[in-house]
Image (cartoon, rainbow, N blue to C red):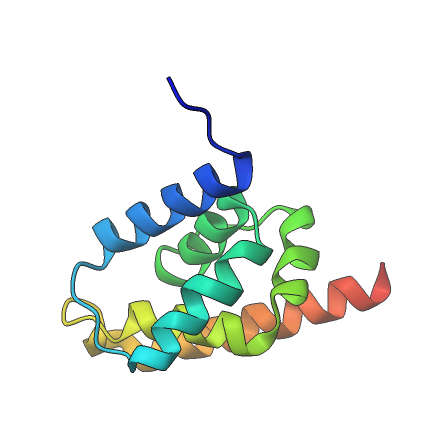
Length: 115
C-alpha cells in the first residue's frame, strides 16, 4: 500500500469535499487554478471546512483558524468563497455570503493583529 504525505492527503480531501459540496464550477479557469494550486495548500483541512461553515452555515471558527485565514491572503479567501457562492443552489443568497465573508475576514485580521 502506498503512503501519501499529510499535505497531499489533506489537499485531496479538501478538493473532494468542495467538489461534493459544489459540483458545478463557474469561475474562470485561472481562478480555479489559483484556488487549487496556491490557496488551499496554505490552510488546514479543518480550518477550510470551518471557514466554509462560518460563511455558508452560520458555523463558528476556532481561534487558530484566524491566523490561517490571514496567512491564506484575502485574494485566496475571496476566490474560495466566490467559487462556492456562485453555485446555482447558493446564488440567490450570494450577497449575504459575500458580506459574511468580508465580515469574517475583517474579524480575523483584527484578531491576528492583536495576537
